[in-house]
Structure formats: structure tokens, C-alpha cells
Length: 351
Image (cartoon, rainbow, N blue to C red; front, side, top):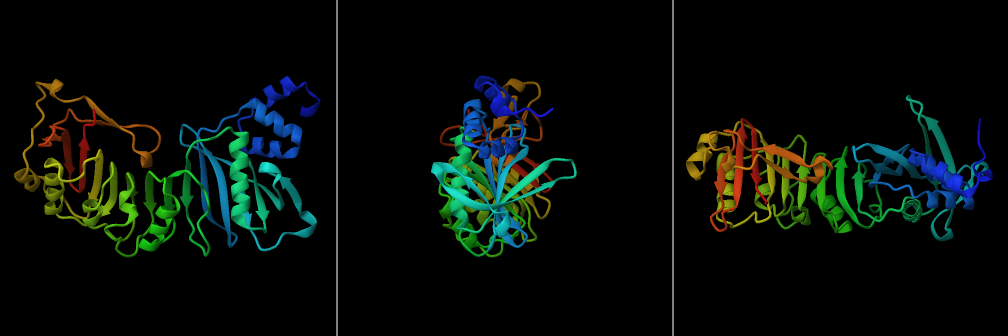
């Protein structure tokens, strides 16, 4: 039997709202009236992390706002589709942040699993509505953290205006160095970039792309060249396909050992186009084999926070014969090298 939420005592209403687990329902409830918005604010429902997906739908730009849970589930909050014209007799005026109002058309549909999804269609300047929606959602979910941005469109027009973006994913589109530079300059706070797209053209050595602390190039028909390693200044690097020689990898190891470069490096994982001959690497560097009779000479595991691998720390067990220990000359910092056919892994002990 339906319950009129506004007829309940205020304290009871807040308790009822606080039990809602669907962020989209909470958002829609807050739009119903000033009183329901107050109930939502008082319920103090907090979003672990907010994310934006910028892509295309029905030939228009669409911005979806979602919550990322601690288990890395993406849950819908709302989406805004920028259209040229609204259906006049279906216009609904919504009030957002600081009494900003926007005329919209509401779309509703059900997914196969039964979940109800909605979308707002707007015909005014898209980033005005998007920014107002962002501020409004920050308010009702008491959010002040950084954002994750997923880009799957590069239609004409500027990139969405979102401040404090620290993680970016790019997928389903072909990108070039100019686009990547535009992304990096638009979101200067970025700490992690993951690219699941084809990169066409050579990225300039001094591109801000190489200044990102964590970046991952996961796929593409074209292989990444040695310049991706040579120009990297960050902490964590992942290349899903790379055209490298053993000499390229030796040069990297020697620069790390001499502390000539890679001062902040924590992890590097590379999948080469061909098998890597470990023997050639071993001939060029000094290393220590693991002695199972003295396991305490090595840490049991190394743990790293790698943003592009999710929120759960990544653990590596280095008490293993396959890991060769290498030391940096200047400070004795330890690195651990593992080569498995085409996979090259290098880890640096940070504590």
C-alpha cells in the first residue's frame, strides 16, 4: 500500500528516505517538491564516488551522472541529453542549484532486469544544465570529492566543464595527440588516464599526457613505441601492446638503477609484440635471485594503489624465483623484475 511520505512525521520521513538504496530514486524524489528535497538533504545519503559519462545517444551529446560503489559498480543517478528542440506539450520545469530552472522533457524506460531509468532532455546550453546538475547532486549527496570522467564521444564542441576531475577513461573512439592534449589541459587535476581506444599519430615528447602520474593504454591495433617509456615521469604505467626491443628495456632498467630517471616509479607492466628474452636483460644488469631458504630477505607482498585497476589495492607476491631483485645505486631502493614471455613487470618497493 503506497504511503504519503509528506504525511509522516518529519523524523520518520527522514528515516524512510535514508533507507533508499537507489540513487536515481533519491534524485527524483528530491525534485518533487521543496519538502522532499529537504527530507533528502536531512537523510544524509552519501555517494562513495561520483562519475560522469560523456557520450552519444540518438545522435546527440549525452552526459550521464553515476555513483561508483566501493565494489566498482556504476549506479545511475540521472542523465542529460542535449537536443535541438523539446516536445512543447511535454515540457516539465525543474528547479536545481541556487533556484536555477530548466525546461526539460522526461524520458522513462525499463531495462530487461526491470530497473526504471530516466533521462532529462534539454535544449539550452548543455554545460549550463550539466554544471547545475553537478552542483545539485553534490548538495543532496553531500559530496565534495574528486570525479571520474568517462569519454566515449568527441563530437563537435568543447569537452564538458567539470572541475576536480582526477580519473579519466577514454574508450570507443579514435583519438589523436591534439585531442589528448585538449583533455589534459581541460582537466589539469587529472591523476590517472586509461585509454581503451586507438591512438592515431605520435604523441609529442613534451605532451602533458606523459606528465600524468598513472596511465594505462590498454588496447589498439597500433603498438605503443619505446617513447611511452622514455617520456614517462609518473608512478604507474600499463601498456597493453608495445613494440619494444630488449635494448629498450635494458635502457629503462639502467636509468632506474643509476637514478637517472623514473624517480617516482612504482609499477610498470608491458605486453610486448614479441617474446622478451630474459637472458639478454640479465646479462646487462646486476640482480639477486630469490633464496627460498631465506625468505625474510624479501617482503612477502608489495601493495600498490593503482587507480586504473580500481579502488582495491593490487598485491604482488615477490617471494618467488621468477622475481629478480635489483637495487638502485644511489639509495639502495629495491626493484623486482618479472618477465613471462611477452609480459614485462617491474615493481619498486616504496616502504
